[in-house]
Image (cartoon, rainbow, N blue to C red; front, side, top):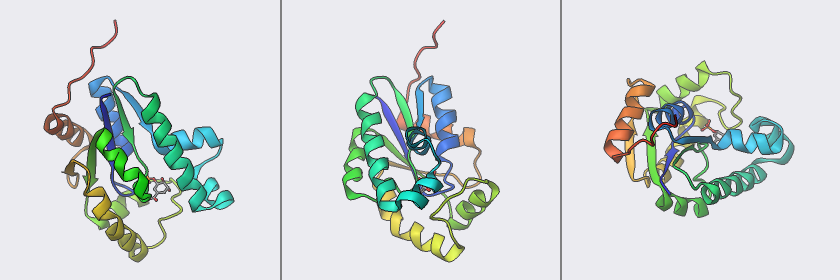
Length: 173
Ligand code: S3P
């Protein structure tokens, strides 16, 4: 199994870097949040509203495990910002090339503001900062940290490819 797991806080660029990375490697791309939404038939915010955060976390763990078990081909998986919050998920980092996409918290906040995605755990800058600080040690367990501030999505994808020594799959004719 050749799998890259992209981890990091909200606004880290996990989805956009993941898409760019998968495209250049010709690997399959999974966005964990989108997979959870597809299975639930509603969006993340709705799951939080209707069932609460613990149920969202349960689904997140279940979905991630299934993707990892089913993936026979090379894949890039973008995790949600809280996917490592459950201690049992930390062990999953060892199964793949785990990459922490890092940026200053003000930059993460600004990037989230630019997008209309509703994020139930993003309230105000103070709360956002505290949550980030509490999660940082977990992200830091990834095998590699890539600073993303001031870099384009392509530059970050390029750096991950180079530093992890990833080789693309041949394109189908
Ligand atoms: C969350 C981050 C979100 C999403 C959910 C919870 C978190 O994903 O999974 O809203 O706990 O930080 P992104 O990191 O892609 O925004």
